[in-house]
Image (cartoon, rainbow, N blue to C red; front, side, top):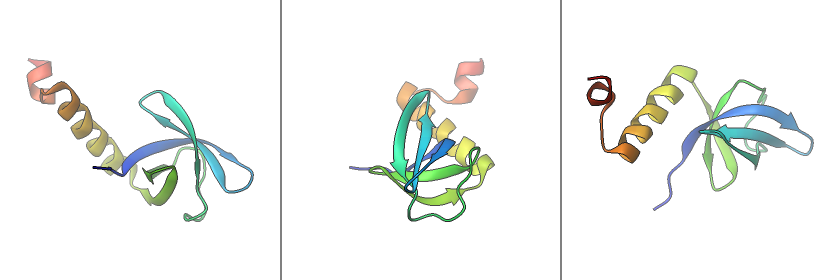
Length: 80
């Protein structure tokens, strides 16, 4: 199963490429399918391609849910 996940754009590169950060892991992806990408944008990434921009708040909520899945604990459980 493949997931499209939000990632933070940290730099825009030549040839429709960009550097993104996925939980501290830096990767270079194609942004050819998304117009006007700038550093600080969140994009949905699937197999090395940005598919669309995403609202930063929605991206943070999605990343928090993915983190919960990885730990098996909800944020409320971790805070307790």
